[in-house]
Image (cartoon, rainbow over all chains, first blue to last red):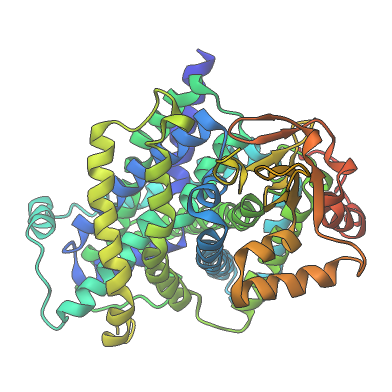
Length: 409
Length: 125
């Protein structure tokens, strides 16, 4: 019974914790500009994160070694250091974007400029990282993130033409006025939003933080196989809402309020209240995950003690890295760089950096020295390999596409 | 011993209390006096040791930073191979990390930064 509750809670927090600023921005932008013509990319991205997060969680559970620890052991000190630079940089940008998202959510609520909310938001993020227990943190913000269900309710209430939506999703076509390069540029951003590298850093380190053992492998599978697709469904609902309400009006979202607009149009003030809360929970929860991931990657490369399962004084450098990362992220937003633009760049860079994280996971998940009998199944390997090929193509295609399309304009 | 590099390099160090204590950044090899193959006499850990293995401009950069962080007369952190208790997926040591000279930077950060912030010595709630 206790295990059952644990599994249920795990699934719920996986659903609520799935969506972050990247998903909100990417799903809204693609829905507003392309309708559901990019929905297949979201499906592909969810399959990708499911396959690789399951591997990362299984590796961490069986070997008690999180991803970046193994990256170094597998790739060697030099290549892993280059990987660390790229992964940390992308994760730090994501942290900055999430802090910006928190501040924008509070701006929506108060009407006071978001820049004023950046310092208190960053302080609150750091305080939670400093003082709150891992499980409490994960459950609290995971469950709060479930309020994003309000978007599903809004879509349902709008009584859309379901068959037209389905047709748009299954017969993807580049809309009039949009070029093919732009279409693929946004496809890459959307894939990046579903598969951001920090998710596997956080998920595998979380397995060690929570002291998972082989009896928890079932928790790992349920979280990933049920929680992530349902979380992806929330992102899809955001995309559908943008397709229904933003695309006909020709709105290209540049602010978080436009992401909230469909819900407001259908459900009014109550909808707005729920949406603001959901934005806050989603971005704040993700700020915690990315803040931790900044510490995890660096500490795991150098072998320092890390984790919230010990006192801060016992993991001094880990906490120092998190503190510096949160401050740097906040300062980056305070330069008045547009947080939504920053998110879009971050997503494309995330997508380009994905093979660096996913390749070592695939290798270690097949190594019987670490995994014993729990090595990858053939299906995992087949899907994992195909995805990796796609990710390498994306890594090569992202920089030229970014230049040709002037970052999707 | 032939596979010392493969077996040991870049492995996690874990101390007697199960705390993470750095990585095997490099190895100290000694040639026995009577000739024969070299034997591993110590594990070198910390940025100073890592810099040597990275090589090139990157290694030089790490070395410069590492040298700034330690006393001029100190050498990169060294852990005598006699302290190695067991080698599995990690290298397990029979000493506590506070006793190792590879723990210097960690204890500096702990004493001068983390302990000075309220709550640094308390477990999260």
